Length: 341
Image (cartoon, rainbow, N blue to C red; front, side, top):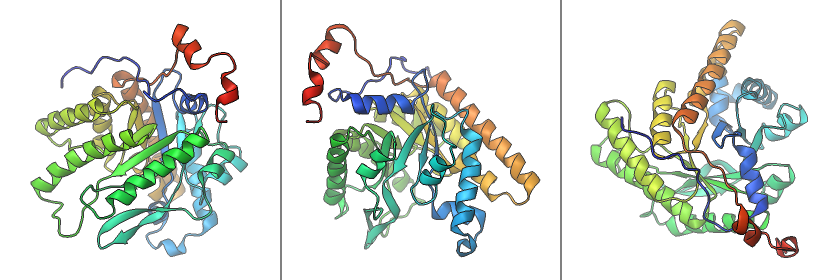
């Protein structure tokens, strides 16, 4: 595997918003990496508890999520949580330490389907204003996008509107583009897999152009062979070359060892970290019996620490900051009078 890129800190090219900058600082480690636990899963989480999720109560789901959350609080720079089961109870129980940032998902469960073409579904009664009011440092949007779909223009508008809303609240926004199969496509074909790689890169570039502050991306490729890994490194570098924002890798529920390799490749290409979920903790939720559950929880914690070490060894830190004339130009005397006015 070739050498990592120069580890110059990434800085967002957008005008300085001190509210957003403070939020982004709270989501990273002191040395500038995003080492984030994803725990905003809903149906998928309950299905791990019991394959017949109709047997899983609200209280059981909350209890399981909070128990899992406690495992990672010493090591995570931030957590991604959902309002349905986790954000309120986690805050109310005092589980979130002051040094751990909070990201809140804004989308609802699933998506609206138009003959195989997807449109984002927002959670009823949950808004960017509420996300800011509850003390979150960032909002997260799960964004299904295929440029050839009839929903594409509406999906681009979804991001534009949310970018504007978040800017009005000085709330950072992370966008998670998802490349999905459309009707009639053979997801097992080499042609589809190759197009998916390009789609992941293009969607990340577009989300950045539309104004996302951070990008949460799928891994553009595979890691089964040396050839796969080399191609994936090239794809990640092409993704990195087209964005000014920091980007992190999602886990998509792949096996842990595969995800660890994906994180290393992404970090060598310029990623600032990871935002991982089931690949880290899936077995800990599914384990039956106290001893297996305790052992799986221990393994999950070890996995997270390994990923933090991989990120620090190979990633590119995100450290926004100004000095000298640039600082006084961004914040001249009386700057606060016009800020968010």
